[in-house]
Image 1 (cartoon, helix red, strand yellow):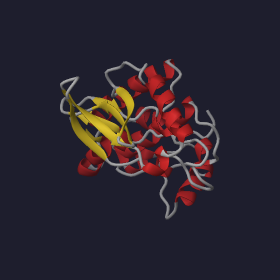
Image 2 (tube, one colour):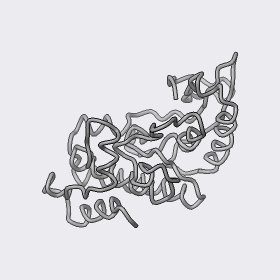
Image 3 (tube, helix red, strand yellow):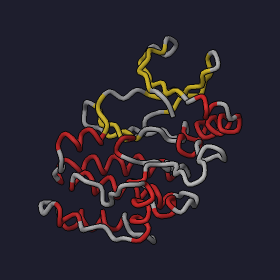
Image 4 (cartoon, rainbow, N blue to C red):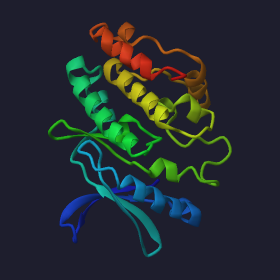
Length: 232
């Protein structure tokens, strides 16, 4: 994408988030059209655990996306700060992500790039999923490029690694990776290159999270491993 700013919308009289679209992406008219179409779909999601997407605009040749500003910190920063979250800390956040994701799935919307960096935890401890519609917009020809993955390798489902169409099960798999990282402090698969990580997502079974954090309940560990199954 591009740089991200917190700005004041004079019409709405509230702070919003503004994301610039890189010129090499915005120069592709089909991609810009795709952004517009995907954002129209994403705007249908009205849920307390999903940040609102506003619009795609252009000023002096610069394209940008506006969305709700969530005051807080992203889940990735929270994990880095705390390390392993306790079950008492992780479960409420997980439930809220599931509720937001459930509403999106009810409307037939797939995120495609679900990761802790795209989950904001606001000042009241509420989880908000960000960036619905953006990953889908970048999947057009000419943006992915040969051998380049759209998404974040550590959180990609096996089918996304293979270049297949992402579906609701893809978001569930990515959710499993997030839950795993929350309670263990690490992602299930790591590697030196995106390719190496992708191969592991396709072919390896992750270590049981209870082996890395004996304090988490068995039921929670089972839910995480179920999300991370290769074939659902």
